[in-house]
Length: 220
Image (cartoon, rainbow, N blue to C red; front, side):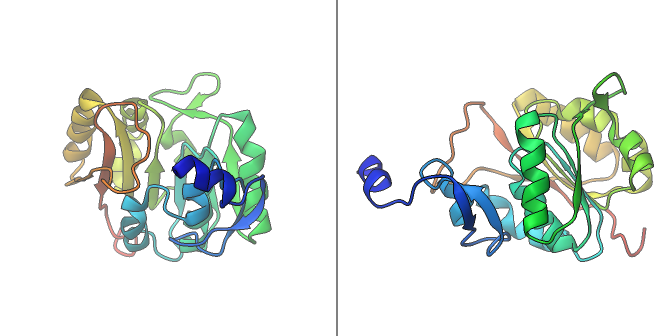
């Protein structure tokens, strides 16, 4: 039945479409609903929508680490009303992110780099990027298991600024070690599990999020 509905009822083909719901509602992306339905509906990772709205305030400076198709960068730029710096090494995504932000009248910059524990070739660190761009008030991170290295390369940023963060973790050991780092820096992470309705395919066991309230930028 689901396949029949998709093939007979769902609009198909990649073209510019307005996102229907969620923090990106009304913004435009090139989407094919037959394959990117959650983006079009605005329910992709809907578990996080309330947290994004609560944590990201106007004038806050954001890093989007693991930008992929640019969905999160889009509404981070809207919520913050500031240029967002997106870290995405995938060549297939970098141009799309820039064009998507531009067509919505939003500002941002894409760094085609990996984020890790040390600078090396096309790998950089959060601390190095904070020095190059700005010290972020908010960080969203989704980098498929490299979270530990990314946090290890953010020691100064976490110690001095302690930004708000949403970190997607991939696996039990990764989560445990990320929690150790975050708690050492004074965070009290809230664990957010994937929703039971409208499930997304998550092949890695214990793939969920750490929502970390940091220091208020107005008092930092």
